[in-house]
Image 1 (tube, rainbow, N blue to C red):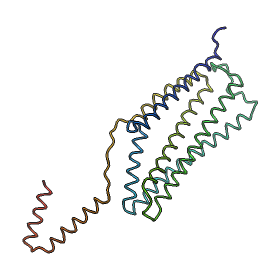
Image 2: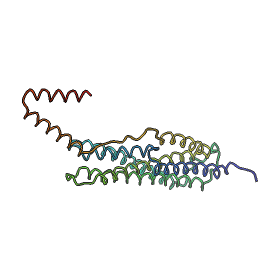
Image 3: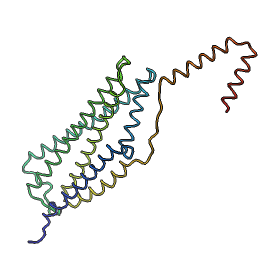
Image 4: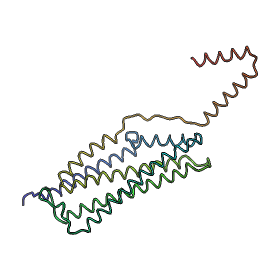
Length: 260
């Protein structure tokens, strides 16, 4: 028995999925072990500093922080709505048993009804996973919104960091589910476009997920700011008590020290 075009789905589809899964396993390993080499790890590092700066800053910075989190919540809610809408459309399409729109002689691959049902179910699972991840992302962003807007200053920064980072992680997983769904859509046109799509997407994602910028060690310590303010106040108090001639020499020394 020779190799027929229906056998392409048995070879190219698992190969494409394996390439995609291996890449994401390697990305997960880098994200857990070497986060600075990934864009998500680099962004999480900056998010931690952002949360600490907001919580230790002035109260007027809280409004800006809430606007940023609200925009992320709105984006996650929008994508969750789109994913749920596509799930409904696919469910209605599957229920129409008389639909043979994608069965054509132009598709070089398996066009049987069983394979077509597997395509629909796989696509539906990806959109459902994307919907669940975007909903969880919005939930964590809302929780971070509550924590940051709390009037009490006893909220630990770690709790806010965890909520913001988890919201971003669920957002990333939801986008990955949409990437898988995009390649499954190509499967309706045959296994060859799907396999080419997986190869192209892995190359594109490798470029987007890799980070070459070094991590910047941010230093933001409120105690240092307080010490500097107290030092300035004590210097001004000493200057007030000095005679005019000593005041002149005092500020000359400060100016020379500033130039150096």
